[in-house]
Length: 135
Image (cartoon, rainbow, N blue to C red):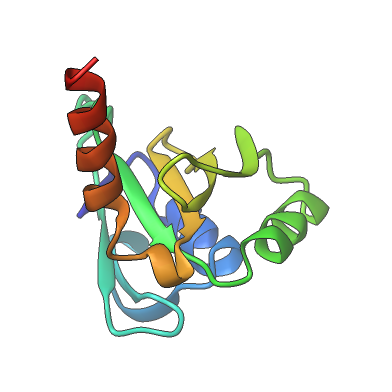
């Protein structure tokens, strides 16, 4: 669940920019206070929930990850819509291609493509750690 100061604004980001599909929403006093969305091309869901007026939506230490096959094209489309990407796509040492951005409430998001390296990230990191401990 992702808490948002404005669920309608967050819904626009996750649905209209990232491509999630609205499953359901709940309104209170004619305002969207909850929405559940399905990931594009999958069955995973994410829920957006209205934060209280005095509640923080800060998520220090938490990053959402979404795998996107055509990562570079996806990022180009976001930029064409004048969306700011904090770190453009680049290959990481563990073999995944990552880009970073923030949702409207500042929640950090990594969009990435791992391809055949999908299940190898942990093994590569462990191998690097083992090599560095022997030096």
